[in-house]
Length: 414
Image 1 (tube, rainbow, N blue to C red):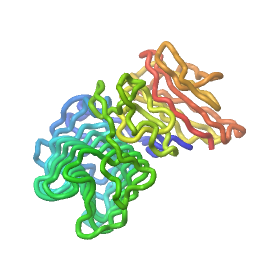
Image 2 (tube, helix red, strand yellow; image 1 turned 45 degrees about the vertical axis):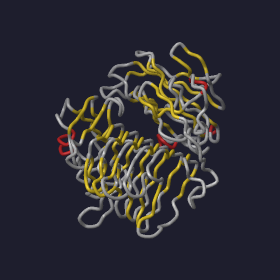
Image 3 (tube, rainbow, N blue to C red; image 1 turned 180 degrees about the horizontal axis):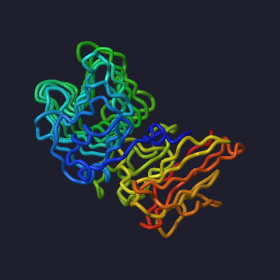
Image 4 (cartoon, rainbow, N blue to C red; image 1 turned 90 degrees about the horizontal axis):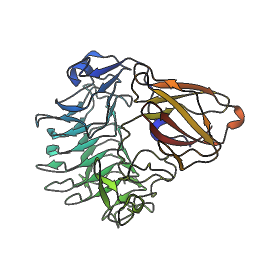
C-alpha cells in the first residue's frame, strides 16, 4: 500500500519563497505569490491575524516544525480565515496556531465563498492551541460543503465562551481527521471536543480524544449522520453510537519529551507502561514520524494520535509503479548537502548505522551521492522493473553532510 501521508500530498512545481527573507510577513507572501507556489516560513513568532489565501492553491509550510514556528492571532480574529473557495491543494503545514479569537473558529475559520462554493483547505502537522471561540469552535470552525482534511494535528486547550465545540464545530460538511490528538478543550455547555450540526458526516481515523470538558462530542439541533470513528482511542466513549469495534476506551498514557507532552508512553523509550495507542491504528495506514520520546520512528502498524513532525531531511517518493520511472525527493536539506538513498526489497530493519537506526534490510542498495539544489531538495529518478510489481520496498535517505537519516518508508510497488 502506498504511503498515505506522503502520496496524498501534491508535488507543487511552482516557485518557493521564504518569510521573512523574501517577504517580511506571511500575509504579504500570500498576497504576492501565485497558485502552485510554496512559501517556507523560517522559525520564529509571527503576529498576524485572519491570514487568507484568496482562493489560491499555495503550500504554506514551516521550515522547522510547529514547536519553533508560531503564528499568534493577538486575540483579534481567527489566525487563518478560509472563505474564498480554497481547495485541498491549499495547504497549511507545520505551525503552532494560537491566540486567535472569533465568534466561530478562533484558530481556523473555514466558510464558503460569496457564491456559496465550499472551502476545503488541507491542514497538516499543526498544533492548534490556546484559541477562543466567543460563540463556538475554539479551535476550528468548518462550514457548509467543506471536505477539509485535518491530518496529524494536536488540537488542545482551546476554549469557548458561550456555546459549543471547544476543539471544533462543524456545519453541513464532511471533514476528515486523521492521526490527530484532541485533548483538554473546554466549553460551558456541550461538545467539549467537537460539536456537529445538520448533515455533517464527521470521519475520524487513528485519532485520540481525551480530557475534553464536559463531554466528547455533541449533536446540535438534532443528530446528523452517525460519525465514522475508526481505530480511535476515545476516553469515555464506550456506549456511544459512533464507538466502533475498532475503537479503544482507555487512558491514552501520554509522555513528555523534547518537543512537548503529547508523546506516547513506551517502555522501549524508558517509560513505565506502553500506551494503548501504540501499534493500534488502522493497519492500512503506513508508519511515519515520531510518537516516542527517544525519537524512535513509528514503524509497523501506525500509532494512534498526533506524531511530532519531521523537522530534518524528509524522504518523499512519487507513485511506485512497475515498469515506470519513479521520482524520489529528499527535502529539507541545506543547499549543496550530499544526500543518498538506500532501499531494500522484501524486508527491513532495524539496521544499526553510524547515523542511527535504519529500517532497510540486507541486501540493500545505495544510490550515488546527490547534491541538494538551491531549495534543499535532492532528486533521484529511477526506473522500476516491471517484474518488481507487487514487491514490498523499504527506503530511507541519508544526508551525509549532516550525518542525519530521513524518515523510513515502506510501500508496495504497484
